[in-house]
Image (cartoon, rainbow, N blue to C red):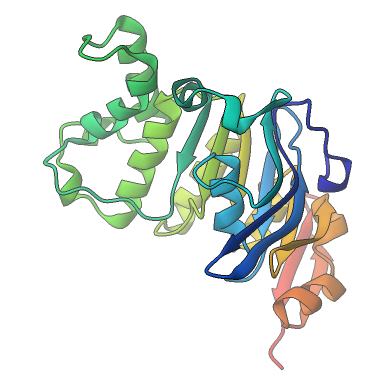
Length: 262
């Protein structure tokens, strides 16, 4: 479902959302309603509002105008525990000085599902094990977080989100710090999961390969939304990124963007 066709009564949706920060308008009337189980890529240059949109969808930031709803209910009316059980977020940067193991960090994804002070259940253990396997981090389970590379930390944070077993998954630049192989592996995994994923990306070609829908932002507003073929055009790329590009069709049938030097 494109942003222009947003339906506030289905899943996690933003309708006419604006957000001001530091006296400036960061989001300007943005609407997006991902189809259930789809992968939506949010694209745009730095400062276009990608991270802010994800934080508004997650309920971390409140919109200055418009609504964010989940199954038609305003997000502000949903209990934080209930929302945490349903929506998982992977931020760009995460760190801790607490001496946690990889397994400890992944286990944090089960906190919304447990009552305080209760030991983890068989369901918790199964979710943690599955998340470690899905992200290829099983052999690192006993390793300390502080000893991991940037790419490994990113995969652990994604494992934590998967252990949460969410219905909606919001990821801010999840391919940062990952080499090409792990970028493909991660996006293969995300696109195969039975969840709705909203992913902020910089790489237009990765978005074309993996996203069912693309929402293109510029200066906080939606410039275009729809399939990669509709959004990743030479004219729109020049308009938004101020860079000339040649867009061809890959053998797999999706757009392939090649940037041109001026």
